[in-house]
Amino acid sequence: MDLNAMTWRKSSRSGGNGGECVELAAMRGSVAVRDSKDPEGDRILLDRANFRRLANAVKEL
Image (cartoon, rainbow, N blue to C red; front, side, top):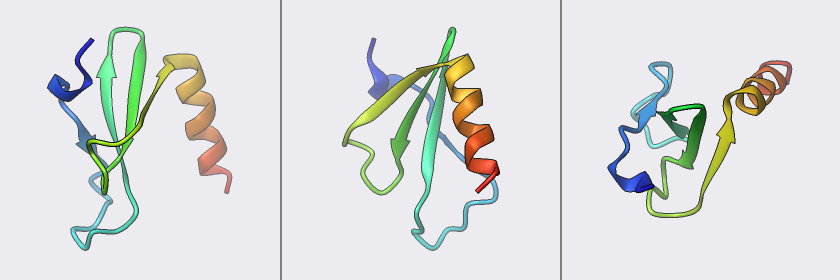
């Protein structure tokens, strides 16, 4: 699977000031996550259930 060919999206709430953001790419059954400041760097791949858990945990911060 070529994660470079994926369509990466950043939150619409993310400012254009080069802040600390993550980008997401939806895939069948999973979500890929990368650092917007380092798009060629490491990525993580989470199944949708674990991504939901992560997103909910972040919302609680």
